[in-house]
Every structure is written in C-alpha cells, then in structure tokens.
Image 1 (tube, one colour):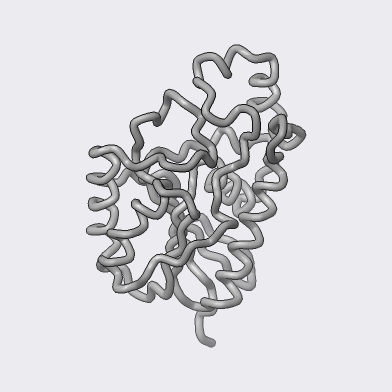
Image 2 (cartoon, one colour):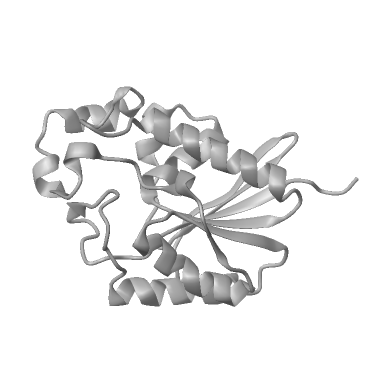
Length: 203
C-alpha cells in the first residue's frame, strides 16, 4: 500500500530586530534582520535536497514570507500564503515590551494555564491551536504522501507540536521553537509521528 502520510516541516520565521524584546504579534512592516536573512538562506540550503516537497506555505506577515522566499526558490515551489499560519492575535498586547509584559499578573496564567487565556481584544490560544489543526488537515487532504513546508511563528508551531504529541495545550509552553528552527511531523491514517523539534537553522 502506498504511503499516504503527509509530512509537514514547520519553520519558524528568522530573527527580526525585535526578537526577544517585543511582542510584535500581527503588526505589519516587521522585516527580517540581517541575521534572520542568513538563517533563512541556511534553512533553504538544507531543505533543498528534500524529496517530495509539494508546497510551501507561509503566514501572511512579512517576516514569514521573507523566510519562505529562499526556501521556495531552493525547492522549486512558489510561496502560498495561508492565514491559518498567522501569529496569535495578541490584541492590546501587540507591540508591547516583553520585559514589561512579564510583570503583568496575567503572565503567570499564560505560562500555567494558556488554554484558558484570551489576550485582551485578541485571540485565545485555543483558537490559535484550532486554526493550526485546520491547516494541517487541509495539507493532509491536498498533499497525501507528500511533504509540505509551513512557515509560521513560535506559538502556533508549539501548539501544532503539542497537538501531534497529544499533550494538553496547558503544557505547550514547555516546547521551545527558536528563530528559523525546523520541526518535522508526519500525519498519517494511524496517527502522528514527531520526527524532530526545534532543529537550528544551521544544524
């Protein structure tokens, strides 16, 4: 019987000038830094030899599309924008300095019970996880037995990994997904298999 499992290579976007300092969310106009562009080229070079790549998808935001561009060129595909891969909508927290946000009382809830948290004026982590599941199911339906590259953001990828592992969303903060890292998950009729998580761009 032919293998109909779909393998998704999740790629977090490369480093930006605000990585680790600000919660940019869905704010427009944030480009990759020079380091981020180097990371994207390194990932593209590593993925160039991957067989069976049927599509390259990216979140609509600039930093993800810039990361996806060299990857798509390297594997002979075009970048397809997928809104389901968007960063979590942080609402009123968008653009906030992380050092200040960590002092908020809500920060403890985000770490200990994210499944029950909704950002003021924004999205809940549960909604974010649900739309990532919708994206994966579509990739499985449209690309059976193939490889799909999905360029997204840290929290959505962490949620996808938690879902694949059968881990409750309240524990997804224990998963680390660094800038331009790759995470590989196969989705088949008999279940999911997580091949690797958070592989560095040059690793």
